[in-house]
Image (cartoon, rainbow over all chains, first blue to last red; front, side, top):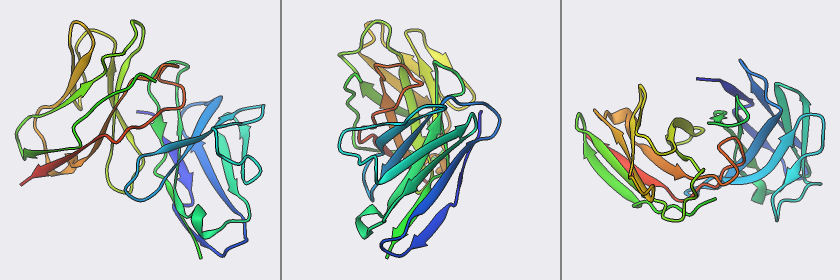
Length: 115
Length: 111
């Protein structure tokens, strides 16, 4: 199947700093990618849709100024958590569909801990 | 997305077939059923999807009832590595859209 990577896999940062997470599709191009977060013992929650060449669309309740998304190329989307706080500590996961219709492939996730 | 209902947990003996049910009684005629699984602390993994015919791949089989209101994911010979949370998803916007994850079924394979 298709491969999606994320970097870093783990990051610890201090409260008030910003953290950038990268999501790459390694063997296909993705005009759309998705960002999710997952709190302990909970299911994944869709945060936003990353669109190559245009603005991201955010789910209700997700602050677009706090979670900055940039889809710089057909293989790279970045999520920047700005002014991170301990409550932003979570598991962040991206996904991308190789085809306009069909299954999606997920990255391995990034564990963010804000101290 | 169409609402899906899955049992919260299931046990299965190693080497036996694991049969995971999913109800999706409000599914529309052109909506597919997708199955993903998430092993602890990893990103979800795509397993299989189908519309109305039964499907099989190297990972699993998907059996969809004739009325399409329910389906069963079958792992033919479960191993310890199949212990994971299994999600049945019926995305109204198509499989390539943002997905809504329910609580899934936590499948535990017993040695």
